[in-house]
Length: 495
View 1 (cartoon, rainbow, N blue to C red):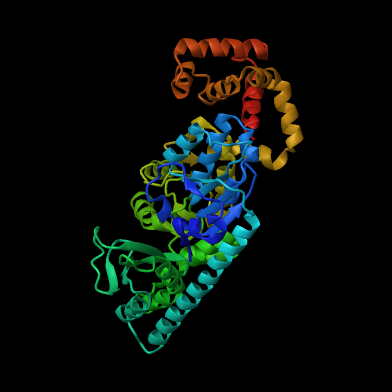
View 2: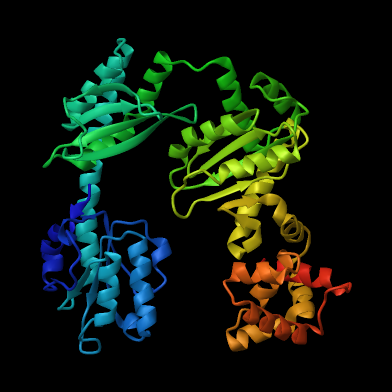
């Protein structure tokens, strides 16, 4: 169970440092602290999970530029840590105002530790307290799920199971279908905007999001207990949903088909499961991969979109990834319809959507899925014209996938250096973007006007850049055999 930041600062081990909040972040002292961590490493952010109170002596940070200090606090804020506590000293008597301003804008509380304290003692003391409380929470959560299991064994329905959960947690409980229909409720709360804190837990059935458990914790209630007990009750509620709404054979076959495709199973199994779930054995198909923190929540919207745009489909949510298989009907034109439909899907920031290459039948579905995933791994390297409306076309990355699979990195690097070495060196020395300009120009079919629009450049600036590129590359490549080599090198450079 987390403790509040204000409580952590009052702990004897931290209070000895005379801590002081330096910036005005709303409700800073009410933030939950999940763990206490200490580090002088400036690239620590990717290793954090969120909710940490990070302790730092500030020695390494004090030697950095103002911009690096600002990016440091931005990175920590993006990870969702509870607060950053910096130890000031004669070598670094004041935390820079610019750094505090950036942290405040990013919503990161910064604490000044005005006396030296042993960080090891702080982490041991507070983390031991956190672990002890977490163990107690898990035990209480397990007790709630065991009580629900006993009720289910005696034939209890959803309302009765939720009543047990509500009684054990002190929270109102409601089970809602993906479409918003209330399946069961207990606890007598309204779930209105002016109610308490609402904790939501997904309830999957056979890997498919079947419902969402909502727990409304009243003011002064234990939100952490509600979260743990809710997560512990997922399997019990899933079993109750199966008894109430058992899936049909076609739906079960679709789930098993997607699992088989995901695991890359043998084609004869796919040829059995495909027709059972509505797919023609030799019909053209394409895989869709959506990577998003809310993948399970997207599944109803994706299913509705696919049902409206392709002859048949199936989907499966797994962790932060949602995969789907679409029957294309008319082949190439059906795939274009699918991509256009996916561009209308509302996804959270940072999500990625890719449509895999077309497979000639159900046996090639695992290949389409694998190629879609490989494409997403290549996308961060950038390909402006290949990502349209936030939907990635795997077909536009066929060259990169081929090169990445069959050419060693050293071979690719040598080819790029021989074809575009002067351009790469110019970018390195002048901090220019000639390689990006060339790549966009080639991807647009050497259409200067379109490339200028995509790069947000004035047409004259675009012409100046191209002229410089031609000088470095040995002349205008249009109408020569060098065009293909330059285009290949520009695409390999992305890898």
